[in-house]
Amino acid sequence: MSERGVCVVTHPLSSSGENATRTLLNILSALGPVSLVTADLPNNSTIRDDHEVVEVTQAGVGGSIPVAAARFLLNQLRMSRVLVSRDEDVVLFFGATAYLLPVLVAQLAGKTVAVEPRGDVPLTLKLAWRQRIPTPLADALATLVRLLERVNFIAADGVVTYTPNMARQLDLNPNAPNVYPHGARYVDTEKFRPRTSFTERPKTIGFLGRIDEEKGIRTLAEVARRIPNEYTFRFIGTGNLEGWLREELADEIAAGDVEVTGWVDHNNVPAELNRLRLLVMPSEPTEGLPTTILESLASGTPVYATPVAGVPDVVHEGETGFLMEETDPEGIATTLERILTRNDLDNVAANGRTLIESRYSFDAAVERYRDILAALRA
Image 1 (spheres, helix red, strand yellow):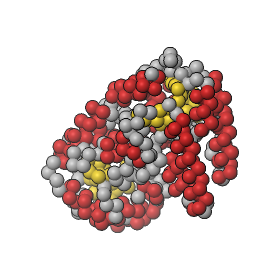
Image 2: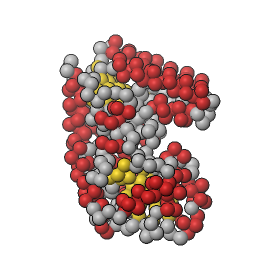
Image 3: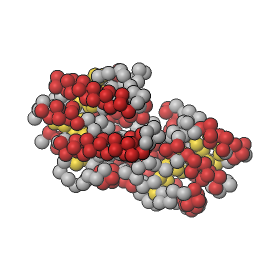
Image 4: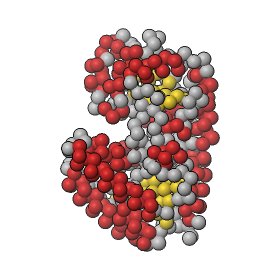
């Protein structure tokens, strides 16, 4: 098959999805022509300036399950019509792993089709739907989405996952011939680098991300109360629980033991990571490989995170970081105290930076996708 470029297809994009998509497009554009077919791209997105974009609708996902389902089907019909007319020989469904109709239409049009999950989408939807509708209905709908995803995994010419462990979490065999388990994104190693030597950093540990329920913020608030007195716990970010967090830890904030930054521009994230001696990330099982973890390691900041999805492939216990086996506040705090008293944390920090430079730089990511596309087209 001649190489005519790659068409990336996504579901409606949130801000985090937009960032991940931009990263993927940057990698693929280094290998040849690339375009994006999507819905609901934010109005201020710079992706339009850098890449060809086809937007099938401006409509959101809707305020109710029936409306969302109708738009889900309508978007698939529109995407199918677009894909038939595209010239690219490879179509990559990024995150849109349950879009069965356009997958089948693209194959019938003679294109090579790959799907790349960004995480456990059915589980993410189930947890969100349980907040809005009865649990049995939420679970049934999530099961339907998982079935569609499984059919796509079988129907597609290839499935790309960030890491081998992520493949296993999705019940895929990383050694199967149609599974490509090394599709992790890259980190800008110039932007994210150790600007402050580890030994000169303040005695601050912290969390960086959305201050929301699903990020374990209530647990981390209790952990913040239990850390050694000479350390400060810094919450970096904003979200629905920010007000609660400030009220809950008002005494600790007043005493200087806890800091809550509020919203931080992404351009300032490297500086924030360089202030930390340890990043604490109780990552969710819905995530594939949190970008924050890669950025932290690139910045020379060790990570203490739950061993979900692709995390154990980059957070190597005692080498580049530490795996959170206990998730209760007391267990996390006890392990934190043990980690912070290690005399080799600077070596752990250096190992994390070396890992990112060797495996997750832009050049390394381009080479990985060069191999993936060559195998898909073979």
